Image 1: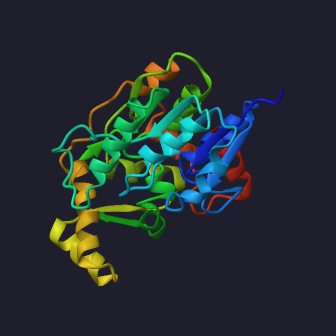
Image 2: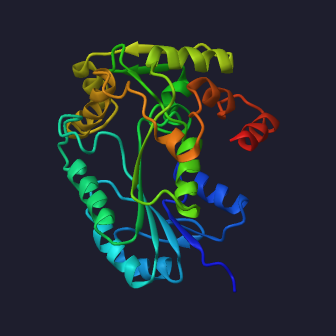
Amino acid sequence: MAEPPILVTGATGKSGRRVVARLRAAGHPVRAAARSGEHPFDWTDASTWDAALEGVRAAYVVQLDGTNLVRPFVEQAKKHGVRRIVLASGRGIDDPDYVRDRTGMRDGIADSEAAVRESGLEWTISRPGWFAQNFSEGFFADAIAAGELRLPAGDGAATFVDAADIASVVVAALTEDGHTGQTYELSGPLAVSLAEAVATISAVTGREIRYVPLSTKDYIAELVNQGLPHAEAEIFADVLEPLREGRDAHVSDGVHRALGRPPRSFAEFAETAIWPGKTVDQAGKVESRE
C-alpha cells in the first residue's frame, strides 16, 4: 500500500516550502497546501479543509495570524484520522509582557497551542524566534536590497534562527517518534544585533549596507509617509519592540533537543542565502546547501 501523505499548510511560505522540500527529498509523499500552488487550501474557506485532510497521516499546521481557526481545523483533522500534528507557533506566546498586542494575535496563537495539546493526537509545537530569512526574503529584504535598513530597534540583538533549522525540526517531528508532547523553542546559537547582521551581509555580498536606528515616532512617520495607515504603522512598530528591548537575545535549546546538533549561525545563513547580484549558478549552489 502507498504511504499516506503528509499535509503541509502554508506550503509556499518560508518554513512550509522548506518542509515540503525536505520531506520529498526523504521520499515522503506530501500534500503541499496553500491558497495558490499544488493543492488549493484557504484557512478562511472551510470547504477546502476536507480535501486537504483526506487520507493524511500527519500535518504541519501554519496558522493564519489573527484568526481562531486551528481549533476547528484540528477537530476536522481528527475526524479524518490524522494521527500527528506539528503546529507553527512563536516565541513569547506564554509571556503576556513580550509584545504589545493590539490585534489579539497572541490570544489566537495561544488558543491554537491549547487546541493541539488538548486534541488527543500526537502533537509537537515549534516556537521559532526571529527568522534569519527576514533579511533575505521577508520583513527586511527590500531594505537590505536597497542598501539601508531603517528600524526603531536601537542596539537590540536577537538569536535569529535559520528557516532551514526550523524545517529540519518540523520534518523530524512529522516523521520520527520521540517528539510527541514537545514544545521546541528555536533560536540561533548567538545573539546578533542588527548592526552586526547588516555588517555580516555586507561582507558576504560585497555591497555597502547600512543600519540606521530610528525612534519609534520617526519610524511610524516614515511608514505613514509611504502610504501605510497610522494604525498599521503602529502595529509594525510594536512587532519590533521585543527586538529593541533584547527580549529575543536569549539562546533556546530546541534545535539541539530535536536534532542533536547545534543550530546554524547567522554567518552560515548569510553565506548560503540568495542575495541580489548572485548569479544563477551561485544561487543553485546556495539552494543545494540548505
